[in-house]
Amino acid sequence: MTETSMTYNGVDLSGLLKVLEVKSDIGNERTIKTEKLSRIGTIATAVEVGAKEIEVKVSLASFDVANIRFVDTTEPADTGRGNINELKERIAGIFDATEPKKLTLGKYPNRYFNALVKGDMELEGITDWYDETTIKFYIPDGVAHSTTYKRVMDYEERQGKMVFSIDNKGTADAYPIITFKANDENGYYGLVSDRFAFEVGNIEEIDGKIVSKSELLYDYRGDKIRQAFISGQKNVGITNVPEAGNGTLELEALWNRHHIKLQTNGVAPARSASITWPVPPDSSGNTGALTEYLWWRQIFWVGHSSQYGFIKVTVTDENDKFLYGVETYKRSLGLVTEYNFLGADEHGGYSVLKSWTFNATHLNEHNPFNQDRGWSDITRENDKVTFYWFGNKFSYNIPAIKDRKSSKIHVTLSSVTDRPLVTHMYFDELYYAKTNNNHWEDAPNRYAAGSTVVINSETDNLVLNNIYDLDQAVDGSLWPVIPPGKSEIEIVQSSWAKKKPSVTIEFEERWL
Image (cartoon, rainbow, N blue to C red; front, side, top):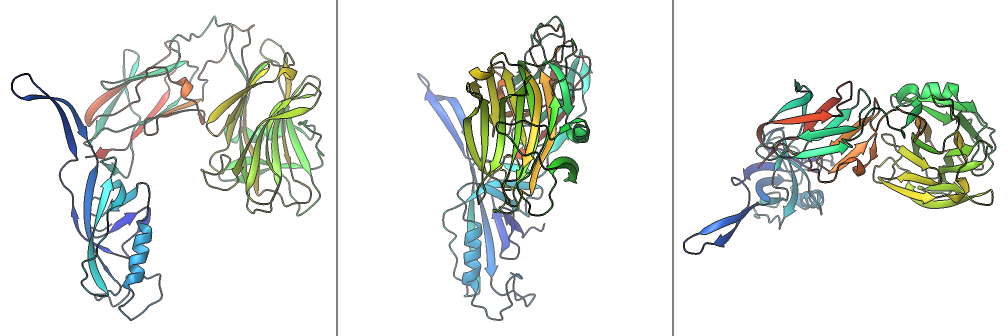
């Protein structure tokens, strides 16, 4: 990137204009609030640091004299010099934003700004093919950001604490993303520095003599889905309604992982296939569950609006009767897809507890089940069932399932009539735990080995095993912040945890 270059909102502007001068004052807007003293002078009660403005003088030319070619090489060559209006229109379209977009300037290598264009871009009127203007950029957050994240993983152990030494070479506070991977059972993480204290979990949680705990019965996360496919029972699945069970499931490798999918053989009559995992006996030999936690990953992404299909994740009782579940169902032309919470009713049927819709595209804002995501979970506490949808949890009382033990977990994939099947309709991962086993005296804790907790101070979010869960944060916690210069972050966990977690601290340096 040269000093004369610029990008905005991901668009390289070097083919449209040339940076001549960048003007930026020292520091930011500062407002001092004062109170008058009784006799002489005032006292400063508050200092507020505001936004930033940067002025960039640029030139634009429809004809590049030096190289005898047009600057915008994507357009057909035109030896005339009168197409500067088209150039102005393209530039205006690029800068037409209603919220801050990423701005990079060659004068500030390895930096970017979140910026909006302020005011008019008035031309000086030099010629009909060459002109100059000054663009005023408004920087609401008032800082320059590093284009890369600094990562800290090494620590010093002091009196049982993990102490991380941080060197923030920026001139403004940084807001870290801190990731914990549990290497053993644990119930608590505490983070302390001179600027904050943040707690996750329950410091009072102990490892032993706890009556109600959880027992992990299935862990088919990651590439263990191949094991799940081998061990699961095929085409005996039960959903809220009878399914044909006339199809075949298979494994497919895509995006560097394996998926369970419905086998396709061109356009054919409606077909469905299922895979079933019985709830195994717990360590005490007890079968079935009234309290349980089910976590899975699925992909549902259409390649064309004419495609149809559904995935159902359901749970049945000891008599093979439907209890509860969810379905992801595309049953019409277009992109709109249903996500339905299902529960048994008092008449041997079922009801839709809640229905949502999404567009089954590749975009994060449209689809929670695209290539890089797809996580869901369900928690059961006898007749209370809690479902997850797009960052939120919703609880329902289902009287018909009270005291009926869960016995089997089913996943069903199906086409709809003779319509083309959804291109990416996969089941990827499964995690199942029996909870509140009162006969147990010891079991996995809140953060099982292999679990991840991400504390994101940039967005003020906390994520547990890829599920947003701010309830994990202890009331009164202050989000982590890293001041300029050198500082330390101390991390502790449950005193009884046998192994230290793997911790990664990432942050973006920022400059006033």
